[in-house]
Length: 155
Length: 277
Ligand SMILES: Cc1cc2nc3c(=O)[nH]c(=O)nc-3n(C[C@@H](O)[C@H](O)[C@H](O)COP(=O)(O)OP(=O)(O)OC[C@H]3O[C@@H](n4cnc5c(N)ncnc54)[C@H](O)[C@@H]3O)c2cc1C
Ligand code: FES
Ligand code: FES
Image (tube, rainbow over all chains, first blue to last red; front, side, top):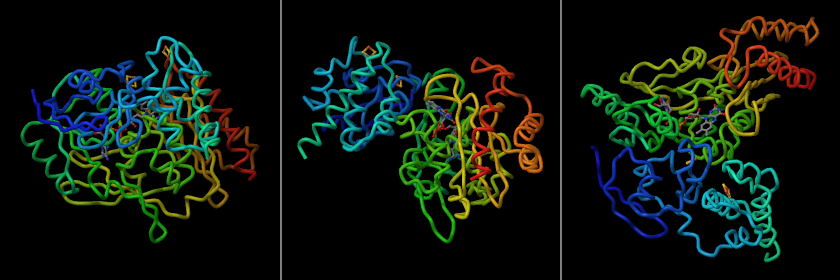
């Protein structure tokens, strides 16, 4: 097995791990670091359950090697704490079983940060990256819109 | 999870990447150039791709260039599709790229990986074919620049150990009147049933296709039929359909008959306004 040391900075904490060079970021986060918030869904780039931020950009961690993310800031759902989008998901009942929620939250968090003025088209374009088998789509969209609206109220 | 091991290499120059490929090959290995890695990782899980070494080209400065200089747009092969969309130097490419996969996946998918990939849709090649662009290719004899039409025939015809570094587009093409439509079996994300892209240059239509055959293409004979302007557009479209390359895809996305029906409507929807505009 071809293993090597990989330095990962996850949720502002540094970790030195020994992993296969062919290991995906999702595998390493879950199995080496015990960060099980990012979920394995399709493992094929389709569902978005595994979404994390790498360098502030949403990435499907089932399709990125851990070694590619070395020395870049990584944010997983464990790194979001009481953010407006998390509160909005609760207020708007934007989940049912919750399996897709970490991926949606990470993506929606990045959307609200990067596009505080996002229009309907932008919101749809971003949210289309994630699948919710319980079909909470409308509530998720409302949660995103409520965060964007509050941002404007506070401006 | 990738079911086999590989070594990961991150060269910082074109020469280093090419030398690495040669060295790994001489050691009996099967190296692959690595762009976004999305196809390499997902296909290897299904045992449809294999490498025992990957050479990540995202840290080679020439592969990350997005530059307009001397009437030419240069796009590095390692640019992600979303970075091209956001910079929007070539609106038809932006439109085409923005309909590939979904936004998060496009943060990873690279232009080079999409054009050179095994999965045969390769939609971002359509605007490149229409704009008669040039490609810069690195190999053991250095860099060469070729017309895309010479190198892309159904797929990129690269020699062993070569990789795509850049595409170069004459600026006179980027602002031409254009049209694009992607028709899927269902939904707004995913592979096409048919995709058609077109530009109008000097009153002639250039038209390219993905999803019709198991390869993307632009065909002289199809364009001749579509540009025979003494005939009504409906006649031209039905004649053009008879000159499509073969085979026409017949799969779970759609039968041959259904694809041709959708293609006929897609062509009239985009070509009539483009021709009249
Ligand atoms: C969920 C999903 C949906 C998708 N939907 C579509 C779609 O609708 N339409 C569409 O066209 N595509 C679609 N794709 C893209 C898909 O077809 C390709 O997998 C993707 O474009 C590969 O890009 P990459 O940069 O990740 O390539 P990689 O995985 O890095 O590489 C793919 C192949 O290209 C080679 N390669 C990469 N870069 C170079 C280079 N610069 N020079 C030479 N060879 C190179 C590699 O060796 C490998 O063989 C989708 C992908 C996903 C994940
Ligand atoms: S598990 Fe990564 S996209 Fe589905
Ligand atoms: S809440 Fe169940 S999959 Fe989305």
